[in-house]
Length: 57
Image 1 (cartoon, rainbow, N blue to C red):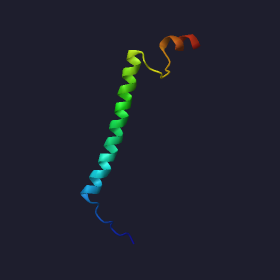
Image 2: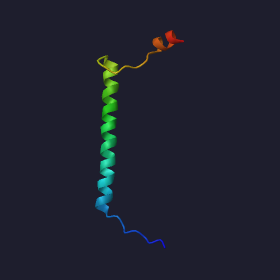
Image 3: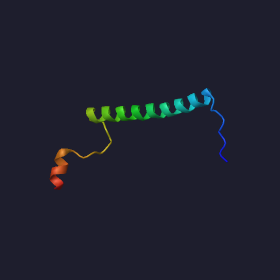
Image 4: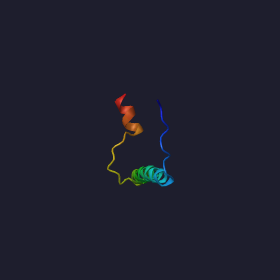
């Protein structure tokens, strides 16, 4: 027979949400940093350009 689980405390819930938000913030910072480096031309990230795609076809 199913039994209701105990209620999760607010502190546990808040801690989980803070962790999740922190991970999202780190990923957003990495994405912005990569975008800035691509725009300035100092990137080591390799990405296809429109000219390269046309040459392949």
